[in-house]
Length: 328
Image (cartoon, rainbow, N blue to C red):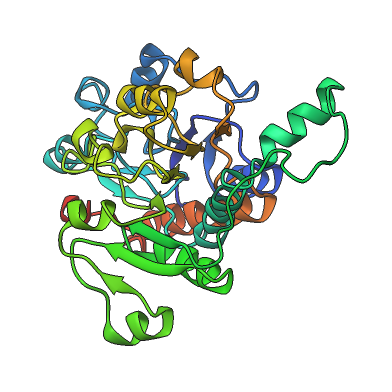
């Protein structure tokens, strides 16, 4: 008798190549119109699924997981961050959670570097001016920004993405500083010529640009609080390609309006997809719609990791990208 294929429910539209392979390997239910699933739809999904494949737009909380049928044994997340999944409830119900680490490192680091360049050099502001038809021509003092060569970059979270950003920034002549839960290996510090700060407060007070690369957990919620943002020099820029909840968005907005910060580059927001309307009115802010990992190559690599995690699990083995609550 042939082995029964696991029922896999996919919460959003994935690249065609990935969806096709999923249909071949598993008893797969796709989200054809790519609508964000409601809580009721997620509950319906976990009642019937052996495997749920959610994304960052889905809240897989205790309310959803408590309705799971007896067959749900794997949540194979399409993405690295798992702050939208209640890991404790999953563990208590014997549900394994996997993610897709590593494949988005270079893409997210590219986007962070793009923002580090864009904000001080007023790139988005200049582009808007051209499109408006208001540009009157070059002059020596027109739209002056700031050089990034020789500036200090403070990296919050020196994991894979933080290190990839440091390599790029070092090539642009920036001086690398970082704060992390634990100090990185001396070889990495040496390669990046990076200065470690045990105290985040002390690092912030000395930086020209600060970029966020830690996961969102209860411990990192509003890590850049109003108090910490006020430690930054007035000429400093804040860049966030991690998670919006790590930065107190209201406090950041107030400081930008008052001129207590020079600018910000944000790819993520505290209440996505909602963006603080006051941020929209500011010229010294570059706002992007969560594009950090948005490359065709990255999405396919993510999908392939999801496939491997499900297939390994279905074959009775430990999936390679299992998430443990202690990791986050």
